[in-house]
Image 1 (cartoon, rainbow, N blue to C red):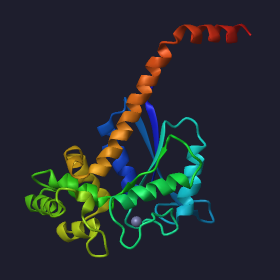
Image 2: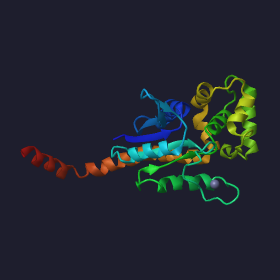
Image 3: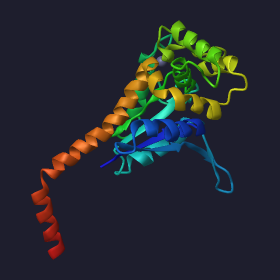
Length: 247
Ligand SMILES: [Zn+2]
């Protein structure tokens, strides 16, 4: 059986990335990914606004998803940068040291909801564009430009090969750096296009993200293994079924 993985994501870019890049990479046979953009509020006509917003909206939807038994894995794709201030926090004193800080926040999110082994929240360090920089750095050209690819490579080198450690901050966030390198950069159009070309090779520059992708892939393998164990028990399953039919 294919694993059913649901991801609460913060916006349409992440939704497009999951559907167009992550799903084909993981493969439809091992896991089926369902990205859900967090609904933050409702207009008077009942139309839901999607994307970002306070943590209460994430909390409610995660609570609902945890209550649904058909998911194999329940996860999130939320940026560290712009993390809602009312969300479960780290216990960092003074500076937020990475990656310990995001790991602590993930654990705090987990502890804030009913315990469920299927629930593994994930925070991207520092934001979605980290992945775009990593993917671009692994290519000879990015959006048709060798200079852009070179600039992305320099950024990754400046962070010692770990794109996740490219600093966040008002002027140095990964998204701001891309905006300074690519004229008229569009997160959905250009960001996802770069990832469609270089996602797999870029994973080498994003170790935390790579670990999360491995967990998603293994969820499918684990389900396949469970099926095998169940098949070993075929005889009793069949007889149980027959008894049920007789009644
Ligand atoms: Zn922290």
